[in-house]
Structure formats: structure tokens, C-alpha cells
Image 1 (cartoon, rainbow, N blue to C red):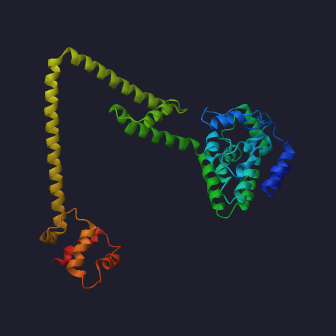
Image 2 (image 1 turned 180 degrees about the horizontal axis):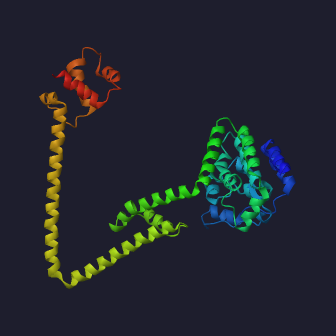
Image 3 (image 1 turned 135 degrees about the horizontal axis):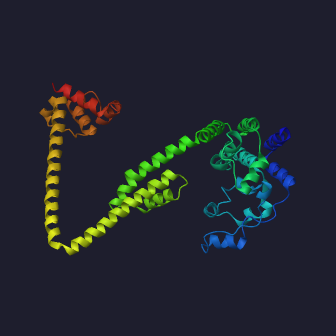
Length: 369
């Protein structure tokens, strides 16, 4: 183990170019291109939706395949990123790839981050590599069971003390602006792994609240959007039993509602006279509800005016309404009291910039005593 971590430290001390060369010497050249050229070009032309990959993989030996040109392009393993950046096919050729284990892959991204001052390399560290290392080797949870991932886990395995020591060395290598960010990412990743069950529970609770309070209402009122339906569908396929149960419950309630609607529609066809009476009753009930709502609105508005004039009694003398804007209050104050003290209204506004609307109302009311 001691020899292994020293190898990682030595790799970290190299330039990115030398680190790539060192790994090529260690593992040999990559055996195939990452994508098939014809397939890549057809994808770029919009003829197909996915790209055929080459036979380069060595995950059975615990190795990942890294794009050397990720110091100039983002996430070259992702077809959509490739298209968005118009990445040339050359970046995927085998001579521009290198094998590495998980920690070596992490170090390559750290060296790219260092040499590009965070422009490239850092996204890979932030969104994938660091979390993976903390999960497997620091907190020691979610150890993979899939064969290829298990090979990768074993290939780079370090003790908790060794990986923590390596992280300290990594932090020193990073640009000073990214050092505190790296430390925070590490702490956040560690916390997330240590409190995974608790955080998952919070996520489930939040998702269920959103589903019942928002999406369900939209669904029941036939006002649901495509994105909301996708959320429900994702919940139905989630690994969490609670999320699946909530989604199925919402869909079940919606189906019952729809069945009742069908039954009512059929009954309406069979009993038109009955529903003519019921529709009239519903109409009058709606009218009464609207009248009641309007009465409550008028009472609330009346109380609002009474409270305003109780708080600022002198403002009634100049017909100031409760919804007067801050701008109009300042205009009144300037015209009535400050036009001789300031050269212009603009100068007065600048002098009063920190005064709140309520403070201006108090001043205007007091000056009218």
C-alpha cells in the first residue's frame, strides 16, 4: 500500500503531459478508438441518436479510459457534450486516449485543473470523481457489486488514511482559488455518504410533498404539464418504495376520479332532466359563493383603509391613498418641505435613498400635524 500511494504522489507531481506519458508506459497504448468514426459523423449529422463505441474497454483489469484532450474539451465521453462543443473526431482516436485506474483518473483531472486554472478538469472532479473516491475509500459505503465496477474499486483501493493524505497533497497542487472549494466539496461528499439514509429520507419527503401538493392538484384539474407527468413516472420507477407508493397512490386517485367522471357523463345522458335541475342549483350556488367572496373582499379592503388612516391620520387631509408609491410620497415631501433645502428632486432622492416607504409615510404624516 505504501508503495502504491507513493506512485500516486509521484504522478501528482508531474505535468499533465508527463503524467499521460507515464500512464502510457505503465499500461500500454489504448487498443481501439473511443467511438466509431462513421457512427460519430452520422450522429453529428443528425442521422442517428447514439454513437457506436470502439472495443477499447479494460474494466476487467480495473482500468478506465481517459480522453487526453479533456484539457481542451469538456466531458468527451458524453455524445451530447461532444456535439455541443463540435469536438473533432481526432480527440477520440486511440492515440489520444490513455488507460488509468480511478485515482489516476482523478489525478489527471486535478493536473488539468491546475494547468488550466480550473477552466477544464474541475467539472469532472466536482461532479463525479471526488464523490466516488470518498464513497468507496473514505466512508466505505456503496461498495460496488457489478463486476466491472468491483474490479475498478479493487484496482485503486487505498486505506482511509492513505486517501485522506492524498487529498491533502491534491489540495496543495490546486490553484489557491479552488483550494477552499475542494475542501468544501470533500466535506460535503463525506457528509452525504455518512448521512445517506437521512438525506434520502429528506429527499423522499420533499418529493412526496411536491407530488401531492402540486402535481396531484394539476392532474386532478386537467392542468398537468408534461414535465410533471415525467416526475410522476420517474417516481413510479424509483428505487425508493415510498416514492413508488406515493406515485401509484396519486395515479390511483386520478383513475378513480376519471372513472367517476365517466359514470357521471353516462348518467347525465340517461337523466337529462335531473341534471338540468342540478346544473341550475350549481349555478346559483356558484353565484352565492362569488357574492360572498366579493363581500369578504370589500370588508378586507375597508379594514385595510381604516388601519391605514388610523396609523397615518393626517394623510387624509391631502387624500393620500394606502397604495401610494414610495416615489409619490417623496414627490409630496419634496414639493411641500424640501424644495428649498435641495437643488433638485433628484438630489433629495439620493439623500433619502436609504429611507423605507413606511419611514417616508411617518415623516409626511408627522409634518402635517
